Structure formats: structure tokens, C-alpha cells
Image 1 (cartoon, rainbow, N blue to C red):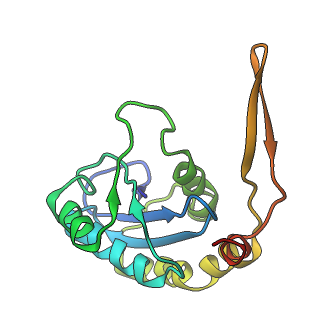
Image 2: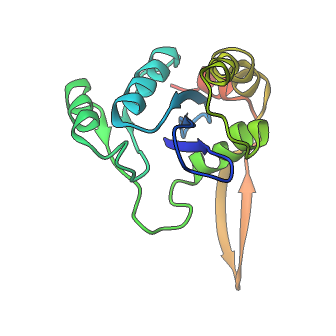
Length: 173
């Protein structure tokens, strides 16, 4: 999971952030927009997303921001028996699964404009809860890396047959 900012060219004041969460095995994605980036708002958004997902959670792997690395989330994971891991600091693209979804599911849809009103927050969440969520999870196939092999100085990647996150979940154990 990661937060995507919607601050435009200025990070001054309050603005909307998107909590973006993806399940690694299937590619299932969920988003929840919040005003600001406080620990409480981020935790509230995570619980809302968890209520919507059609599978049990085994653990979480958040970015290293203080909105995630805190006692609220740590105690929640202990209470819910969720494995709590985190990204490696100062490693580019360490959380590649979520970084890709941040672009394809949030950045390409909303661009880099500033969103800072409660009306915009409601519109964004309406898309996340309904149309965008359904489209991305039920109709948009994703590819998964099946293998990669170093050949000289380059890496040869092989991908499996693209399937929707929903189909991957239905075919999984």
C-alpha cells in the first residue's frame, strides 16, 4: 500500500491523497481518497478498503511513511494477526506492484492536478467504490511475471497469459 498525493504543484495546505492498495498474487486493486495524510485518516481508509476486498488478508506491506509506520497500524496488525512488513528504505521501486498501480489506476485517471475540496473527495471516492474499481478488477487484464533470466547484460522476462484480477482470484486456492 502507498499514498498518492493530489496536490498539484504545491504541497501547501490540505489536499486529497489516495490510499492505493494492491494484492500481489491477483493484482486486485482498491483505492480510498482521504483529506490530508494523517495516521488516523490513513488507518480509516485502510479499514474501509479491507471491508470491500473479496478475500482474507494475510499481511500488509506499506511504504515507509509515518502515516503507515506507527503504533496504530502495528497494533491493528497484531490484533488482526496480519503479517506486518515494510519497504526497504532508499530503494527505488521497492514496492513495484503498488507503484505500477499508482500510475495506471490513479495517475492516469486523475492526472497531476490539485484536488482539495470535499466535493472532489466525494467524486473520487465514488469512482473508487464503483466504476473504476469494477473496471480495473473485473474487466482489465493484467500480466504477471512468470520468470526472468539474465542473458549477458540484459534480462529476458516471460509473462503468463493476461487475466483479470477477479479471474485470478477465482482460480486461486
